[in-house]
Length: 426
Ligand code: GDP
Ligand code: IMO
Ligand code: MG
Image (cartoon, rainbow, N blue to C red):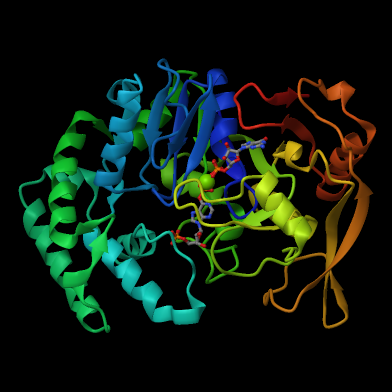
């Protein structure tokens, strides 16, 4: 069997959580391969709404195995809160959640470092979620990190204290007072105590050698869906560096983050919002600063699912989409939030960039001072609720065909609302 992959093709928040939840019944296993609680994946069904941070979005089906892979990173306190929240709602998370022993831990001081580095950047700040993502991946690559599997070793405390002391030395070299540092409403010491207690409680979740586990399942003919977090344009290598996250959010992250060979990759579902959003700093060529941008924001409810931060909004960006399609080998586009533009008279798509009078249909190294060439299309001006693919209004069908023609990829599913059932299958 193959591993199918679901990735965001823009700057995150494309609706990945919802689509994983819709596709999950077709799979035996759902696995996260990168990122950490900087993610917020929303799932809605039966009038209930859940936001997942680290747990794969297959958790609502009792018969699915959900794996947090070695390439992801875990904050025990945030993960335990997530587990408890689901348990309160009647989901027995521990029965079908497994965590790779090689998954790195986000330590309390990683979060402190994130805050220190971000503050030091001043007006060039990245707009990080401040969940310790950058510093944790930094320590992983520097071979200083601590993994879940290390937490049960007798020398864990010693290792922890050593790395914490090293972090505090770095913090000491900045103009930053660790004693007045508040983390999620707690003093550092309180936070650290809760963090340690959570790590202890997480022993209730099964730790596995996920690369063996996953490859064995594939041998047995089980089907696996890899769930990406963030989006391709936030990739550490291919995103708008340095305004990116610290992991490979693109297809390569699946191989290194789960231990599966490239030849095992099957379909690659690219999740694309019908327009663009971005939260945090960094270039955004099609960003709208006018009433239309505001309308997308309000009608699309474009506020961070966890932080409530305002998401910047703009038109669909084809050069950026083609780039994400190329890097990931996307086989299917799944278009989300089309319904947000149901009452738009005119819709635009950026077909190419113009920089210094030169036309680009690719992303130049320096993504600044870019102007966009926009194709105008007539809106569909009606509700999409309950429609089948062959009943789509002509202007919406035109929008879909234009995306397919310009990106070279078939749109195989459309999401027209946040609920699990609001899906138009092709
Ligand atoms: P993710 O991080 O990619 O999983 O996306 P988020 O959950 O952060 O943000 C997507 C938001 O849009 C959530 O509030 C979803 O409930 C919502 N959503 C998902 N698909 C659709 C859709 O097709 N239409 C509308 N109106 N909302 C959607
Ligand atoms: P999901 O999985 C949208 C953005 C942050 C910031 C940059 C770096 O819900 O789509 P980090 O915390 O990683 O240091 O932040 O990346 N970012 C996201 N934006 N959706 C996400 O996840 C994001 N995760 C990180 O806003 O600009
Ligand atoms: Mg999100």
